Length: 323
Image (cartoon, rainbow, N blue to C red):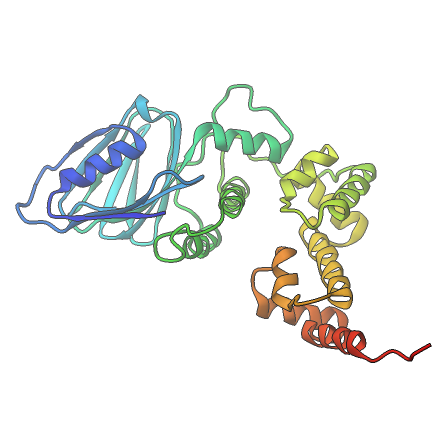
């Protein structure tokens, strides 16, 4: 969960950041006496997120101690600049830049600067890349281009932050959902932002792997299931599995999983007993938005789930003829 600290002492904000992400050199070149500083932070989640502001201009230098972290920082207000490897990048509202383990990195911000940091552990991101691509990194760190997110990625990133970040759900998700959301964010980064190992996999998974994936989905559709797990079980990368599904089945693994779960929901509603409700059936199968579930159910089967359940109960309550 998020913790909030509001203060007029920017050093308190700095200490909170130090505790969560490790120490770095921080100075206030034109320190003001009375400031509005604060931080909202969730450091112990699968993805560490913070929103911070110092209320005064800052100069920050990240050194070798930060090599185990990847950060993606969005300017929410004010402006600043970043310097790394001789490159100077301007920061303004809405711009997200990667802060990564590439050696010394210097940031300078004005007194209005407020930012959101999304921080991944290096081993977590590397492990996900190897599962996603099916290729080892061979101890070479991923290097993201020192460039702002493009329009598409910036929009998707903001949508995700409204669910996971302090402006939305405040990380108030079950543990499995948090982990799955972390994988979603990493997939966005790996597929949408240029990096040193970015490869567009054009070869589809073998048909055997697609058949194995279909069987795995059908056998485990009632469980919490990620496409990464399906790809691993079928022995191929996520990308090649997605292409294989499109080539062989004309759909995606995610859409196929939704189709299987929708069929199970219909079966459960037709055979439902006792006090089972539409919400019970939907939640058990991983559907979290009841309105969307009902709409998609009707689109697929021609009637609402509540109608199916009502028909089943009418049949169950119908008096039987005595023998």
